[in-house]
Length: 323
Ligand SMILES: [Mn+2]
Picture (spheres, rainbow, N blue to C red):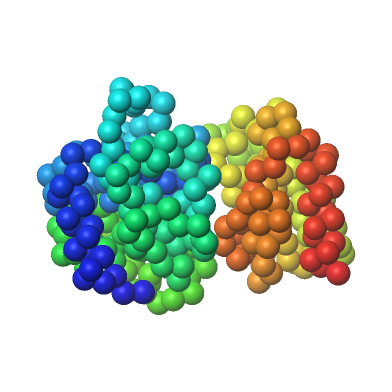
């Protein structure tokens, strides 16, 4: 994707004339969502001399607790004078579909102008200016492209944030489809970024999380001649989880013959979070049928029903898919 001169011009004009700028991404931010918001926020402060408000809803996992500028992002309900705060420009990053944004969406609704940067497939864009690229491996890649095209100055905090977004969304370069993101990573490494340190900081979970994840793996069930691995984390164990239970998905995905991996998380009574992964098998269609979405081989949904009903429904969808 090429960011056009026209897009740069509009971005520049809107930011220059804005008195209040709010940034947000999807609820329960992952590395790409969180770091893209923080990187673009810092870039605007550095290059336009403007103060921005970075917001989120849900939880930020512990393993992202040490990313640069982490303290700059605020839980949306803790932003002072929320009811009155006018919003000139809202920037939504890595959001997928509008309802994924959660609480901060009220800032977006109030905004005079909305800018979006995203790499999700989305038929209902909310931006007045859309700097999207479905071929990008991470939204952080789009932030980098914008920074380069605009000729902005940047620092090591921004570089670390961009690299963290890239390594988390690419599964440390496992899901890379296009060389661009490797070239960006190469430039960041030459600029002094230490990938090993970033990976080390990301491997930083509470012990109870790893214990809960491993118990869920040990109790996993297998269906359709072992092609589907299905793990569950019930509401009692859910509070121990940090992030999405990525380790459960990764471990089950290492089993010979497993093509689909599903993790059901009972977030509370009658609310189940579903994470789906496919090993060269699409799972986004099933996620969409459950009211969610995501990427081809990594998708998810939240269903308001009992754990038993959700499991039954998921199994019947997989039965259709696999037959
Ligand atoms: Mn992303």
